[in-house]
Length: 208
View 1 (cartoon, rainbow, N blue to C red):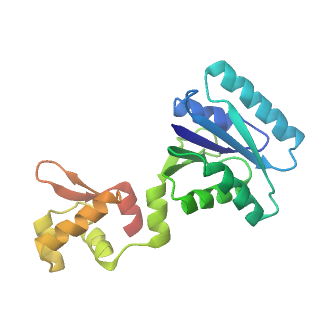
View 2 (cartoon, one colour; view 1 turned 135 degrees about the horizontal axis):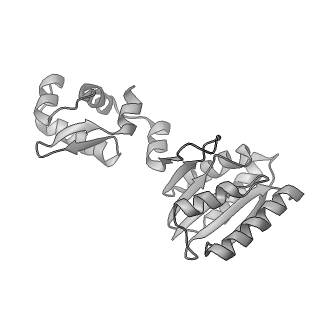
């Protein structure tokens, strides 16, 4: 089961695009967060979203109201609601109240839930992009000095385990272990039969 999380302002269009892009079904969940008290504009957007969801076979949206003037109260409300769910979370943060986007992100991190962050382009014509919770955890907690050393040594063209060991002055076994850790974090990948180690897009971003 996937749980789609959507901060709602006065428009529901981005929520519909999100559900279409991920081919959401009634087996998924859609949790909509907005500020309390519920404004007329947000109420209208939510009712429109309910109508579209019913017509298209999307999950029925569940509305959660939060106090957008009190971070800690909002954190507690969101945490209590989301703690009931397991599965893959997809958080849309390109629309709606930014306050809610931050609170929901922080709650998911606290709950140690597997989630991805989905950005709707503000122009409406660019390709949406996503960021995994795994990468956000790296951003928060950082990497060891040896992991950073290997990432920097790979450069744009990558390198073999033997080449890395020679450049870094480490044993191949040590380098292989570090590379395995970096692969598990989604920062490097092996390319071709030679198993040349190359940076992923996430890895390149960290050493840019």
